[in-house]
Amino acid sequence: MSNKCIRDAKFEETGFSYTMSLIEGKYKMTILYCLEEYTVVRFNELQRYLKIISDKTLSQKLKELQADGLIKKVIYPQIPPKVEYSLTERGKSLMGVLDQMCIWGENNRVESL
Image (cartoon, rainbow, N blue to C red):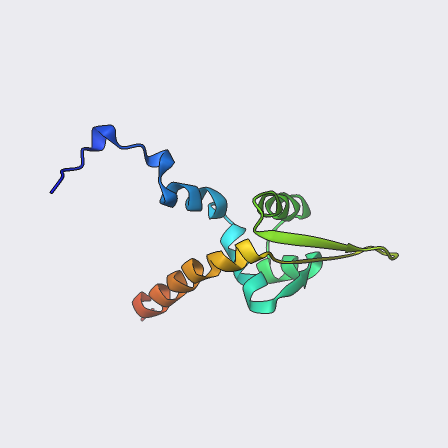
């Protein structure tokens, strides 16, 4: 049996650290959850779902998720432009982790009195 020593640990090289780097932040997990639940969603629909989020912040988070390969953006050539977001296969593969978080939350939620 080997003893692990924290002084030799490199947290940034762990799978946990990598996963968190993709989903950390105020809105990313909620955006992913929304796309899992509703499959294909337009920008304004996401904005209404998230309630209080600026255009700039939502646009930034969507670009980050797209750059990480978790969501895809489809632009339809029409006026006004129609833009839809959905999960990529890579994004879908992350949903098991988020589903487990939801299950844990449901099982451990403390009801208000």
